[in-house]
Image (tube, rainbow, N blue to C red; front, side):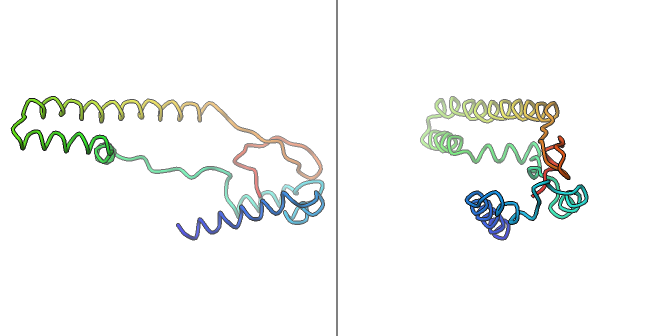
Length: 148
């Protein structure tokens, strides 16, 4: 993780430096030409750096997701209230808090699941494209094929 962060910081510094350079200096710093990259060089860089995509995160299983939701500070607070109420003999209060806990966890699961499905659906519908310069010609490519 630390290595990834250092790599990010180095790329950020390079970007900041390139942004302050003249166009000619920036072209040299980025290892390109005024005509853009050759198709071969673009393919080589794509092979070296990989696609321009966000990393995919592993989806949690149902029980892992539920456990994560029970670690929410509000839910923990409700669990403590429920436990203390039961210990001091206030069973009515404890029985009122239990549904609140399950409503909180259930609603958050349901709403987050819906929003995740909506985001996935939008991601499938949208194909982001970028205009790049390759061998002096403007061409449109997928954003995932843009290389440094």
